[in-house]
Length: 234
Image (cartoon, rainbow, N blue to C red; front, side, top):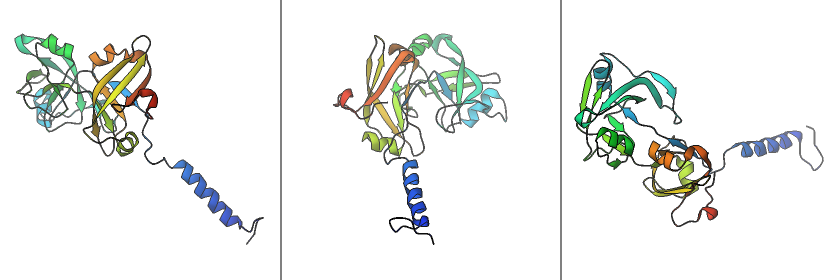
C-alpha cells in the first residue's frame, strides 16, 4: 500500500476528500428553500362527485400545467361561478387533485362582482361561509358553503420552520419592496407541511396593491424584528 507524505495512505486521503465533498453537497441543517411569492388567482376545488356532475359520468380532472407545489396542477376544466341575482364569473379554473369538499376561492373584488360577502378563511375552513352555484358543460352544483377569500399564507417545510423559528399556525409579516410602493403585509399564516416548498400565496387584489409584478425584493419578517435585522432575506 502506497504511503504518502505525512504518513497517510492514498486510500485514507481519498476517503477524507470524499467525506469533505459529501459534507459540502449536503444541504445545511435548517437551510430554507428559496422564497417564492405567487398570486393565487380565483379558482375552484372540486370533489370527485362534483367533477362527474359538472363534466359527465366518469369524468376526471385533466392536468393542464403543474403548479409550484409538487403534485398540484391547474386542470383543463373550468366552471362558471354564479352568485346572487344571477351575477356570474365564467371560466374559473379548477385546480387538482380533487378534495373531500368543494371550495371556491375568490378575491375581494370578485365577491363584489358576484354580490357575495366573502369571509376570510384558511383553506378548508367552511364554517359560516356562503355558497354559490357552479355551472359546468354537463350539469350544475349548488354549494351550501365553501365560498371564501383565502387567508394570505406561507407554505413551509420542516427546514423552513427551523430556519425562521416558527411553527404551524404562527404569523409572519411579508415585506414587498417595489419602486415607489413598498408594502408590509401582516398576519401571514404559517401552514406547515412535510413535503412542501417555501411559497407565499396572495390573492390578486393583494398582489396588485403591492405592485408584486414590479417587486425588487421580498422578506419574511418575524413580528417585532426589523427587516434589516432579519436573517430571512431572499
